[in-house]
Length: 252
Image 1 (tube, rainbow, N blue to C red):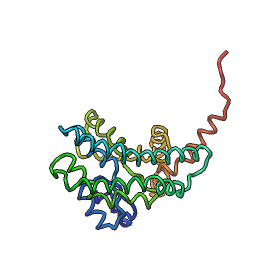
Image 2: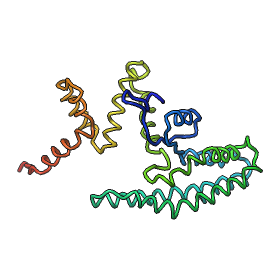
Image 3: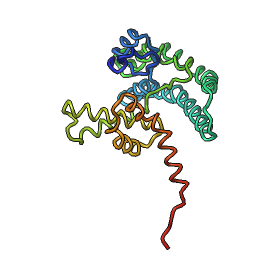
Image 4: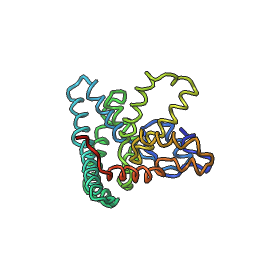
């Protein structure tokens, strides 16, 4: 993990959103990163408590955490995303202050009530029970879980990344040579290019076709950097617009 954050030009300085694995704490402390907690991983703990607990009262308490508190935090994020989509349809970027105002007005009161609820419940809950583990996880991660309230550019979960990784995890069971070290490195490189293209709203097949056509002539660092998705995007977009502007000929 640390290798991904430390490059020849220096270590990454910024924000990192993870689950509760303690190894991430050490990395963030060493690299002085802002460490955010994932609300989806928190919710998964309460989902498990609701599923495996035998007592109806415990299942009810787990449902309370999910429905009355965590879901409401997610609902605010859905509202933020809907507003962001409206801005994008108008060709504008949504100001970060919009997300900040919504989180402060709607999420923060819910988050505070949730923490009071957890603190009240935790002392009387068996620590080795599924609910006890969910409550303890919440308390341990709390400073990271609430950090999003002050950083409106940070998401509250890493669901998008988890979904993208799932595709790769399923695919490598079928793809040849993935468990060979060289093959795994090659597939990881291609996967990184595809996901970076998607993140920059570049169609992956179109992007890779252009890269493979130009790569043999790219003999300098500058030429290779010119093939990165965000650098090729204006060229591909302009080419697509020209293609769409050409009248299509139809056979009689």
